[in-house]
Each structure stands twice: as C-alpha cells, then as structure tokens.
Image 1 (cartoon, rainbow, N blue to C red):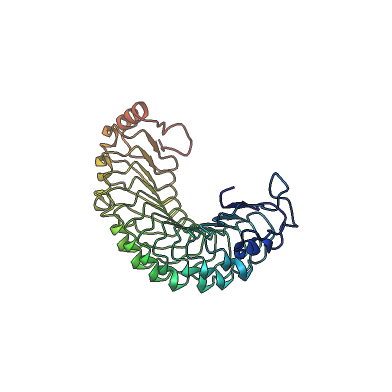
Image 2 (image 1 turned 90 degrees about the vertical axis):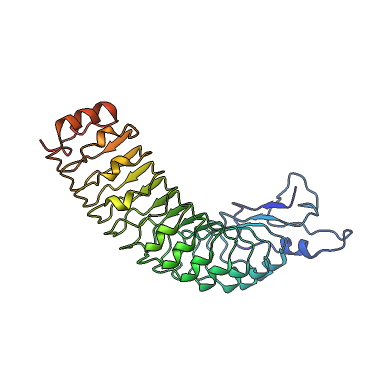
Amino acid sequence: MNGILNLASRGLTEVPTEIFLDEIIEDENQQRPKLKTADFTQNNTDAWWNREPLKTLDLSSNSLITLPNEIETLDNLLVLIVQNNQLTSLPDSIRRLRLLEKFVLTQNQLTTLPDGLFYCSSLLYLNLSRNHLTKLSTKIGDLSYLQELDLSENDFELFPKQIGYLTKLTKLTVAKNRLRALPNEFGALYNLRSLDISHNQLTQLPDSFGDLINLEEVYANSNRLTIFPCFNQCTKLKEIHLADNQLTEITDSQLESLLSLLSLNVRGNKIRILPEQIVLLPNLERLDVTNNDLADLPSKIALNKKIKNISMIGNPLGKIRKDVIRILKYTNDLDPLASKTGVRK
C-alpha cells in the first residue's frame, strides 16, 4: 500500500471514522483501530494501510449524503474522489486540504459550493459535472493553478468575470447548462486548448474568443448562435463544431486565420452561401454542411485535394455545376446524389 485507500462501491452511508483516527495517531506503538464496515485488505492485520500519509481516497459509488468536518485532518490528500454519491453539501472544512490536486464530485446532488472549496489552491483538476449548481462563486478565480474544469450538466445561466483568472486552464467543459452569455474575460484563458459549451442557450460568443491563441477544438453545437464566432487569432484551431445553431452566413474574413483547421461542422443551420475562403483552408479535411439553405458551392471547392469528406445532404443545391459534382464524387468521400434529400435536380 502506498497512501492510497479505495473504498469505492462499499455500500457506505457515511465515511468511516477510522480514517480520521488513523491520521491523528502519532505514536507508532499505538494500535490502529480495525474498520468495522468491511475488510479492505487481503490480510487481517490491524494496519489496514501503511504508515505513509493518505494521499488518495476513493469514496465513489456509495450512498454518502455528506462528508464529515473531520475531512480536514486528511491534509496530505492529493486526490479525493466522491463521484456517484448523494452529496447535498460539502463541509467548509475542506479549506484545509491545501495540497489537494484532483477533486472529483461528478454525479451528486450539490446545489451550492462552500467558500472553503476555493481555498484548495493547489487544485489542478476539478469535476463538478452532473449536479444541480446554479451559481459559480466569484472566488473561482482563486483556483489559479486549475488546468481542467468540468461544470457540465448543471443549471448555470451566467459565469462571473473572475473565471478569466484561470489562465492555466487547458480544458473547460460546460456543456448542458442554461448559459445565456459568456463574459468577455473568457478571452484571458489563453492556455485553453479544448472548450465544450455545447447544449446551452448562447446567442453569441464574445469577440474576445479571438484571443484564445492556443485553442485547438471548440464544441458550441446546439445553442442559438446567429453569428459565426470570432476566431481571428486562433491559428491552432483544428476542430469547430457549430451544428444546430441559427447561423445564416460565414464570411471570408471569419475563416482566413484558420490555417490549422481540419474539421468544420455547421450542419443544421440556415447558411445560404459558403465563402470562397473555405477553398483556401490548407488543411481542411472534413466539411459538414448538412441541412442548411445552400443553393450552390464555391466553384473551386473540388480543387482542394485535402478535403476527404463533404456532407451536404438536405440543401437545395439547384445551381451546383455537374462537373463539380463529378470531381467531388471521385476525389472525395461524397455522393451528393445518393439521397432524396440531397441535391435537387
């Protein structure tokens, strides 16, 4: 054993007090108590984990309603996993877990967060997904070392501007909330590589999105966006997912900086014209414009040999030239005439 205690799926309704008793025993000759809830080791010794301070505690998939205040005694913890329980609150005493780097709280019943959480200043990974949270504290900015944050499947409508203080963040997942807007300070997340804001109620994204210079993938599908977002400095962006929004156009200037783009998905919008700039994207391999209002395609699109897959079923492509169709069909993974909902003859 090496400071790791796995109590997952033990049918626990409360955290065994023996965990905390062990942490405060200082006399090496003093006998450790046995856990009465179960035998967690392969032998029946009193030392159910070794003398090394507890660094990882897994309490996932139990029936815990709360964590006791004594959790503060585990001040050497690096990893705490309590996913898939019935937690309705957290004790403010978790503020003492100053070394904690990974905290997994997904799939509980949390509606609020204690201020003490934001004193866990060593956190690198925080997962609060699948709870019932409605408000994010302005103290979120105090978690300045955070690299991954998952707030998906909650009930957030707005985020405070202090979220922009999380400048070390590389992955942010806030899918399936009720977000109506994002603060302009989002643009300060300059280390962000992966962003998932899908399945919200966003009508536009702030212009500061163009400052996310390290962004590689963005998922913004299933929102209410009417304007193609500003990505003017996002030269590392490889994947853009904007399906099922209300976009009506894409302009040349909105695409010209996307030199690394591999995949563009704008299916299920109301786009009428694709800009010629799309032909000039040097690395574009996949283009999905299914179920839009396109009547034609850029005349030179077939000349882009990088494009391997184009999906365009469900568009009134009445003006597309037959020679373009032939070239696309034989040089790309495309058969626009294969469906009754495809090109209109």
